[in-house]
Length: 165
Image (cartoon, rainbow, N blue to C red; front, side, top):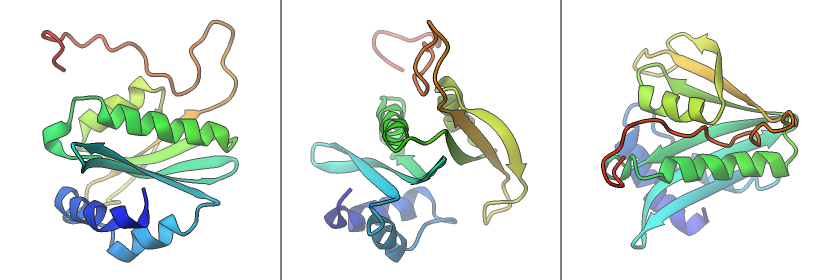
């Protein structure tokens, strides 16, 4: 993500999270902290269709935000964004990646579980509309021999129609 992306990202933020949208200035502030932050966008045909951000202050990396436009959900964009944040966490030598996810968002929870995140806590009424946040953690310690690398998604066993999620 660059500063030129901020207006489009903020527009998506307001569309996707109308109750909890970050103010535009928050994106500006986050991007200015490159030593502890990493923000990325996903583009399709020149349009931003997803974005994600990470804060890493060792030993913890924290997913600040991750979003994909609804019309592009289920196409691997969220997975690609999450993979990039986990890769960045490993590069920054974080031991754990934390995130908050809405208790009423099972699709996102399933994505995180596929990557090895586990629920460790609940923040009651965390969101402005009163919904709880589930706190999830991915440990980035060295894998056991033969185990997949941390943050590698488990094979998806969801039945699919000819290349359709």
